[in-house]
Amino acid sequence: MSKISTEQMTRLKGQFSAKYGIEMDDWSAMVMTEITQRFMLLTSEVNRSIVQIDEATKSIKGKVNQINFRNNHEALRFGIGLSLPFAALGSLISIMVLWYSTTTREYNIRKQIIEDYQNAPIYARLMQYGQVVDREGQLCLALTLADLESGNILIGKEYVKDGEFGRILIPLGRK
Image (cartoon, rainbow, N blue to C red; front, side, top):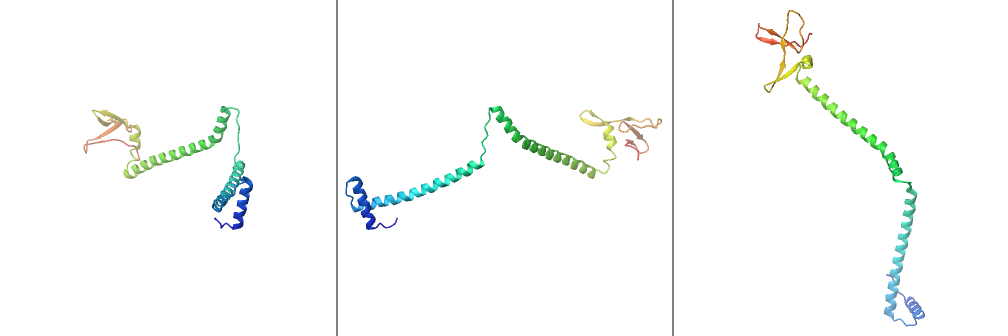
């Protein structure tokens, strides 16, 4: 703290003697002056804090809009009304992202199959009309012998026997 002058000490002793009727020694006067100075410093800090708190209170009051409701149902409707558009938009975006990712994944899988198997488009009718049966734990394509005399062969249902090469021909369509 600052130095105490003899004049300040004399004044402090005089004030103390006038107020209490007792004479104060030099040490007590110095301690009392030190306490007074520290108290003044503390008071100025408190006053500055009060001013800052008042300013903050004023700025908060200007930013807060208080809303009062008559009952809980009215408050619930108000809250839903505020959050429903954002929730709906978020849900719509989530659904669109999910749809896009699944369709893209399916498309990529199908594209990869077509690229890997060059004959895949030719087998399309066989896959569409063919009948698969389970025979003793094995999946088999079920076909019947085609009637070549009628000239009408059912794709995916009938086969043609080619005895010349010892093979069975399964019609996949016409070019």
